Image (tube, rainbow, N blue to C red; front, side, top):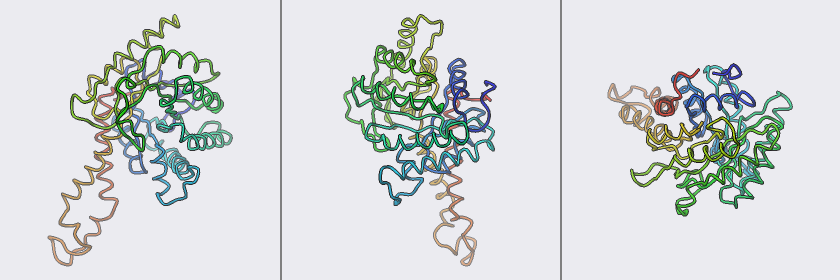
Length: 357
């Protein structure tokens, strides 16, 4: 692990060093969508068990959920406040787990730019006080816009982000399926596959930004959610061909000049995942599988202790026996945390993100 990468939240040059290290050593970091401190803690527990870095990811809806569904969300105030609160929680506890943590935010389409702007302001305020940004990175998903507009807006924001050492993740092509209010279930299948020339346009433009750091979510058949075998056609060879194309354009020595990210990782085969990693994928998003794991952990707790969860008093041990220690919310939530952490360790094994610290 690079000397610049230490336990706690990783930003700026240390983040760039970490992502380059992952690319060189052919492993990817799981980018996990969270909805509160329980799922945040499960991420860091898994990272500590696996011995690898982790990315904690806030979606717009996840941020609002952290604030509370009834809070005033005028101009995305609740979405912004929840993401900021979650980031501050991670900063308060991450070092206690002894792992490097990347603080990231997920898909932001054009209509959601007020949310994005709010987090940039939080970064700038935090940077002025602490010399580093609050978040490590943010994602802009302008893939529904014309390519030139997508690139132009990304460049504008990267110029601002670079001043406070925040990395930009941008998306090309469409990730199919539905997640957190973004529904691409009926999109034309041709839009699920990015062309190398499109990635080159992005690389050429964003590389011109002083101190700019960026990754590219290039579509290669990715779909959010989990589907029956045969319903998703991943083509990671697109990423390999793109690296070759851009290497030729640059005339550089590196076989993998681009840092790619893999969206819609839940349900993907280990073979596809590892072939994508060989093409320079340094992060894979995971949400659907960890959502199920958390729910299943709580559900299994309920099934195991069902006779102690029917009333406050009275169970198989006696009519007057109390059940408080069983219905204490921490008990079922902890089961959810444990199951989610176990599923994440499995994901980290698939991503070669084991014993990397």
